[in-house]
Length: 146
Image (cartoon, rainbow, N blue to C red):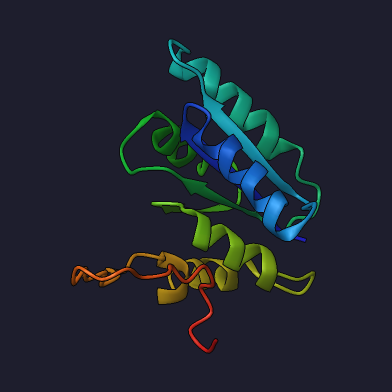
């Protein structure tokens, strides 16, 4: 199964992985690699290279990053010179849940990248919450069909 690395400034990536496991159960081949405050970019790059070198599948690695242009992003871009990988920025919870539930042993790196770019994976929408002075009961289900 294609490996997925979540890379971020601080513990954001670890929080996403923990939340994913809470929602979707234990995950195989998904790793979090945070850049610690004050950590040298070279040290972070070395940890990333070690994690990428552990891949024995030959299928490549999908790296999801918090934002474009930061140390995690730049480290992954640099590592792409030696390792077969794809990089997607702007990771979020809907994206990771979608990936975890749709990937399979047969998934290719290209297919997983396409999944991250689907509108369902973006997870950004405005919810109209109009208050008209009356009491309302909040609907807790995200399922629009109920």
